[in-house]
Image 1 (tube, rainbow, N blue to C red):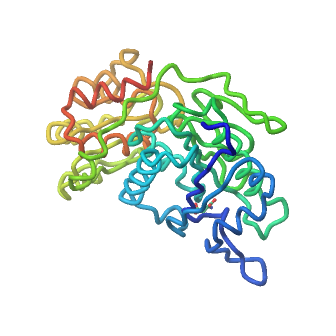
Image 2: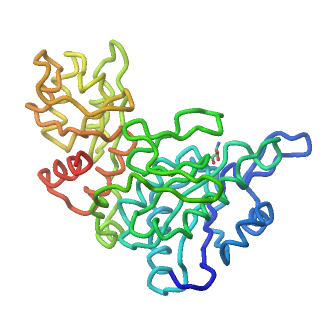
Length: 336
Ligand code: ASP
């Protein structure tokens, strides 16, 4: 970063942070401009020269994988042009754990890239958007953020996309990283990053992903006494991959094994835990439908990734033409 005032590009994607309620205070929809967001945080303008890039104005559930691929291209172009010192992305919280993870898979730049959003829209008492935006600018302008890859800044905490999850539907402390905790925090404007990860994850080549049809990867979550018809539908419908959120450390009801083994013969099938935290077992249980059984039938372990992130990683790896061995290794990289 230069000695001059840092230049931060704020890319807005919509969401609650940019949503305006109707005259009765209800039915908020994303339509605020970035300039209006900046006006609510004069402190951020003192820290950096902010430029606004209105990229999408969506509720975050409407964002697509293609949108995020395009966003990755925009940020790499900014890095090339060398006229930006950091990037802040504001968006809806509903899918933030996925978009930040996807961008982490795709970006190679060392530029600080910080995601944030809000749980309370600007029309509500205690709206958290301005504080989150200020925190994001503080992190984006801090030298410790360079080379970290994308991070999520929320409620004065700094989270890594590989761990972070939205774990509450309404709380302003909705984001947590159950497997690791936040890697840092902000206090009185000071950015602390005591838990810098040993390495960044290896990116998936964006050109390969962008030049191919995006694979369709299904995500199924198991419940008590489920039947196997959905697995059969996934095969019939021509999906390219399947992620299955299993019980506990990697267990399924025994009546699913025939369909799962058939699925694993035809396409990559990754199993994750529906618990949302912890690493999968490899050799603790040996009953039909245990982790041992799943592995021996050719299913691939997600290691520590949850189902949502596993679906995105598998999609990107398939788009880049990864082999089965490469897929196995890429899931393992999150364990070291
Ligand atoms: N509730 C969401 C939010 O926090 C809506 C969305 O994800 O766009 O922004």
